[in-house]
Image 1: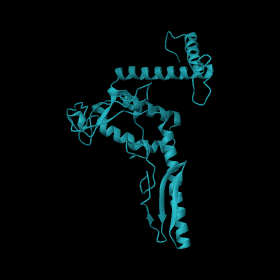
Image 2: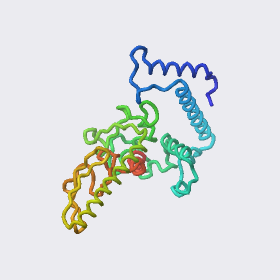
Image 3: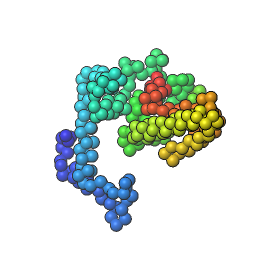
Image 4: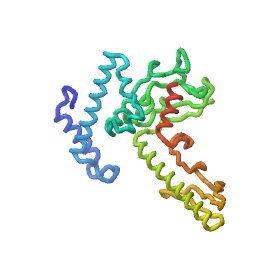
Length: 269
């Protein structure tokens, strides 16, 4: 699907430009993985981007015609996901729609305050309100990107003075599902190492010190005791539950769901 007026040769020309930039003449530009994509891959990505653009534009037209129509595309029940009612592509569409959705009072935006004023310097548990959408602060290089300086968030302030707040720039949000999956694997490996130490301690009747290393990352050590307790004083970089939490400025969230819940509370009210 292509927007009206966009000819195939224009898309081919766009692909050629991308390839020339990637090849860089006599001095190739470094490319992730070492090899730049071929023309067919570039054209496929352009077609996919144009199709997504057309879909989003169509949904904007629907919203203009029928108020609240776009809110239907961001709502899905966990029970429906668990029941297998949606494939991964459809679930991605839900997430993509949620990321770009501009929240309004009818969606619960600013529910704690009536009327709900915008507030750049955060104050209190609900922070702002300082934006209407995830994409409003994550846009550098396109959707799911980082934020510009003007999109900084000012956390934990007094609601007025800039120097009272913690200034944070929106990080890139693309590919975080892989980060969550990796953290989950690391958590399991750390917990299995703890359990093995406890079993060995119970069998041998003596304390067993277990060095905690997973995916090449060291998290200190624990000491398992025969009575089933664990000395965690040597832990580093992980809580006593041995759950790796890769999200949040201080590593406070283990899953994207918890991050999104917190962001909705703080930025959208």
